[in-house]
Structure formats: structure tokens, C-alpha cells
Image (cartoon, rainbow, N blue to C red):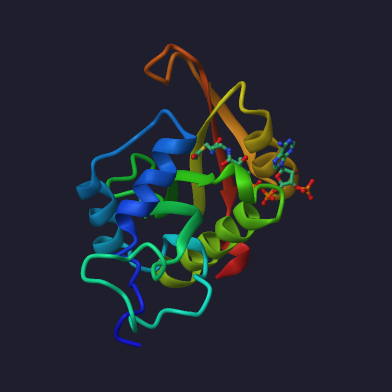
Length: 174
Ligand code: ACO
């Protein structure tokens, strides 16, 4: 359908989801840069509007009933200048709306991005940072997805909180 929104159409809603769920926020052009540079790596989970995507009956400029709602997203990239010389992916941001948590959405988004990093870019591993106090995300990364803590980065966040730098080897997915 011509009215079916593309990933790029959804970037403002993805940005809103990020602002709602996390204090680390980015300019819209940074989302666009990810989408244009590594189109395989980022994913969005949406709630389809009732009645599908037909624009029939919609007033000009009214997209509320016709665009899907964003339930969650993963924003991911390849490291452009890896200091260790190893081709690897990086999770810039992941979040799921409160109304849609504990349904397996984040796990699915992460696994899709990890697979694309391995298959499209032959990434050796994927890295990310997470607040040391973020219990839910730590469970997801460490217990569900099997990431390992590489090191603690002191005062990584703007408010002074430390981050765990985590990584997961992807070579078995090549
Ligand atoms: N407490 C403990 N474990 C949790 C919790 C929780 N509240 N939420 C998820 N998990 C773990 C569990 O191990 C779970 O497996 P299980 O349900 O089989 O026990 C596993 O994560 C997978 O859960 P999902 O349903 O896939 O996770 P969800 O879709 O709810 O999203 C997320 C998890 C992304 C952490 C969500 O809580 C969120 O958006 N939080 C706020 C934003 C955030 O912290 N994002 C991560 C920042 S780090 C970064 O962006 C790189």
C-alpha cells in the first residue's frame, strides 16, 4: 500500500519512544544517519492500527489512526573506527514502551539486530553500554542474551553514573 509507512517515516515516533524511556537522547539526524548508513541493523516493533494502513477517509495531515504506534525499537550501528581493528556492531539505544514490556519484544529486536550484524557485516562481536543500576536491561543482556561484562566505565553517563561495557561474540552466526 502506498500509505504503508517506511522505517524512515517512523523515525520521529522512534525518537519519541526514546525520549519517553531513556535519559540518553539524540537529534533526529542521528537516527537518520543510522538508518541510511546501516539500514539492516535497526528495527522497530509496531502496533498495527485497527483497519490496516488504508488512507481512505483520512483527513489531510491526520495520520493518528493510520500510522502504527511504536512499541519499541533498537538503534544499532557498526563501529566506524574500531580501536581494536575488529569489525563489530554497537547498540546505540534500545527501549520498549511500558505498556508493552515483558512480552519478549526487546529480546526479539536484539536478536534480529545481532543476526544482521553477523550476516550483513561479518561482525566479530556486538558491544553496548548499560547503567550499572539498570536491573531489567542487565537481566536481558546478561541472562537472556549472554553478553559478558568487559569492564566498568566510571562516570560514563552525564549524571555521573557508571556503565558496564558489555559484549557478545557473534562469530558463531557467520
Ligand atoms: N526485571 C528483570 N528482568 C527483566 C525485566 C525486569 N523488569 N524486564 C526484562 N527482563 C529480562 C528478563 O530476563 C526477560 O526474560 P524473561 O521474561 O524470560 O524473564 C528478558 O529481559 C527479555 O525481556 P523482554 O520482554 O524482551 O524485555 P522488554 O521488551 O520488556 O524490554 C527493556 C526490556 C528494553 C530493558 C525495557 O525494560 C526498557 O525499555 N527499559 C527502559 C529503557 C532501557 O533501560 N533500555 C536499555 C538501555 S541500555 C541501551 O540502550 C544500550
